[in-house]
Structure formats: structure tokens, C-alpha cells
Length: 192
Length: 192
DNA sequence: CCCTATCTTGAATGTACATTCAACAAAGGA
DNA sequence: TCCTTTGTTGAATGTACATTCAAGATAGGG
Image 1 (cartoon, rainbow over the protein chains, first blue to last red):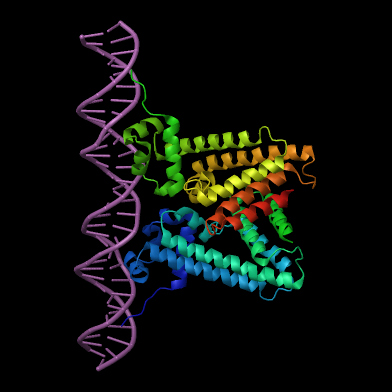
Image 2 (image 1 turned 135 degrees about the vertical axis):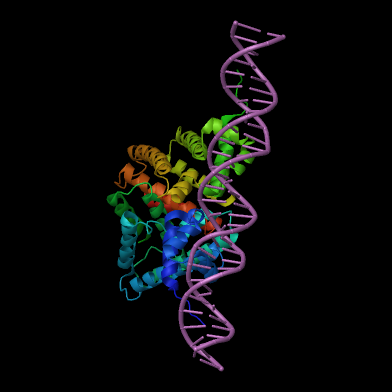
């Protein structure tokens, strides 16, 4: 027998970074072998194909993001305050992040839409789960009476994720921190 | 002498559609020759390279979009009402458009960001011009006293385009017309 | 200590791509 | 009419890619 030598999480996080930086199509197997320090054969043995690597990286991304989200909101007494923190983190990622400037899921679904229904379906499922995670927190805020505008948690969650998608895209056109912070504040104001 | 036989606008609009459907990287010269009914040599004689074709298509896209925008707002007596119409058009494009589901500029800048500074710069410039066009209309609405919330036209325009970017991205995850229309209404409410 | 099952290595393979170019066609001036 | 200039054609070129695979390495069981 012989056991695999590499750390799957490390490999997937490196791959993830490549896909976020260069997109799905322009991330070559060569870039992936360099970033992961694995040879083509090992990557193919572990993940089957470039698409397999991408889907595994996507899953790792979702896991990591979900951990971060849960940690932030888990013991929050004021949901709106925590949401504000969350938006600030995103703004910061947009300003000084290299890979984290983008969301792997939205960047990829935009690239792949109409070309690969399988990848699209996985990405859509993950993004819908993200929306639901927001809805859950916003429901708590409604129950709390932090939010009293009569709009449903689902409705607010949709607006929230739409705002985040827009904010990240807008940041590609304008990196001014003041503008981005103002947008984040306006988003928060629009749901409270 | 001999004169060129093709219609540049037709060629660029066909190319545009290919780039919107498949993205920059996955639009091969073969797809472009098929869509434009031009042979590689003619395309290269006219535009120099694939990048040249893309940049020319981008310019045509901006021209077409600007014509549409201007036509809609030119003789508008109620800016907010016209803005509502504009958002409805976008929602409709998201629902039943094939190529028009996406904005060529945002889709491309998201794909190409970090890989091609030249293309990025052109796209950023065009998207900034788009934002300014909004600011101009919103300034009219402020002068009109249609909008009296004290926020500047620039600020409102930023929020507006961010919302549109987000709406288009959100539509890739959820095609439900009710959800999209509601988001459009909430966006409008957030700026009035 | 050796054997075998599994992992690693990286050169080889075939394909798809962007780009070039030499041959051909047309059009207008001389 | 013919000649020159410009447009058109599409096969040929070299490159970069995803994927494969045979040879080598390693670890644990017998």
C-alpha cells in the first residue's frame, strides 16, 4: 500500500485561488499543477478532470464561506450590526484582495452560463443556499423586531445577495473605498 | 481598387452576440467567422486580432446601448417613471434574452480582470460613462424635485448601476419573473 | 525482507486554437 | 481593355491545451 502525500484542502484552496484569479477557461492545467505542486497524473487520479477539480474547489469554497458566515452570525445579538460587519469584510476584500476581489460562484456562473449546464446547476444550487443562509438570519432579525418594515425574510435576503453581487461587480469599475463603503451603508439602509 | 463587401455594424453585432453568449476566451475565431460570415483573413484585415474584434464590438455595444438609453430618457417628463421602464426592460432581457441576459461590459470585465489590463481599462471607461449617464438623468430628477431625499446624483447613480449589475447577476441564479420584478421595484424605492 | 497494491512522475498524444499568407477576384482609372 | 490596387479565400502554421500512460517510487502486510 501507499498513502496519498498531498493535503486535499491545501490543493483545493490553491486551485480555488487560480480559478478566482483567471476564471475557469483561462486556468490551465499547467497553472493548476504549479499552484498545487501536484503533477498532472496525481490531479487526474484524485479529481478525474479539470471540471472535477473545479467542482471540488467550488465545494471547498462553499464550505469555507459557510464556516465564516456561521462564525460571524452564530452568537450575534444584533443581526443588523453583524450584517454591517459582513458587508465591511466584503468591501475590504474588494479593495485589497487579489483573488478574494471576486466571488468564485458568481464569477464562474457568469462565465459558464450557457456553456456548461452541469457546472451552472452546481453553482446555482450553492448560490441559492447562500441566499437561504441570509434569509435565516434576517428571519431572526424580524422575530427580534430589529427589522419592522413588513418585508419577508426571503424578500430581504434576495435584495441582500443582489446588493452583494452588484457591489462586487461595481468594485471592478471603481475601487474608491469611500464609494464602496457608502454603497454598503445604503444597502444596509435599504433593508432596515 | 475594390470596396469592402461586408456591413461593419452587422459584423460587430454578430460578434457582440458571440462574446455575450460564450465569453471572451471561449469565443473562438471559428465561431466568429461562422457568425459574421467572414473568413479569417477578412476579419484580420479589418480588425487586426481577436482582441481588436472584441474592442470594436464593445464600442458598437456602447453605441447601441447609449442610443437606447438616450431615446428613452430624452423627452421624459418624469425621470423616475422612465427609470422604472428602463428597469423593466432589463428584467425582461434577463428573463427571455439569449445573449441580452448579460451585459457585455460587466460580463467581460469580470472574466478578464487581472488578465488583460488594456481590455479592462476600456471596459471600465465605458461602465463609468454609463454611470455618468445615470447621474445626468438623476440630476434632472433632483432639479425637478422628483427626488428629495438629499442624496447627490453621483451617489444615486452609483447605487443604481450597482443595483443593475446585481440584478443581472441574481437573474443567473433565479429566473422567477416575480422575484426579479420585486427586486427592480425595491431598487427604485431605494433611490426615491 | 520481499511483494504487491497504490501513488507519483513527466514525457507523449491528439486536438483546438489564433494567426498568417499566397493565390485568386473584383473594380476603377488610364 | 488592361493594369494596379484592394478585398477575399481557406488551407497551412505553430502554439498551447487537456488528458493519458508506462515507468518508477513507496509503504505496509506476510
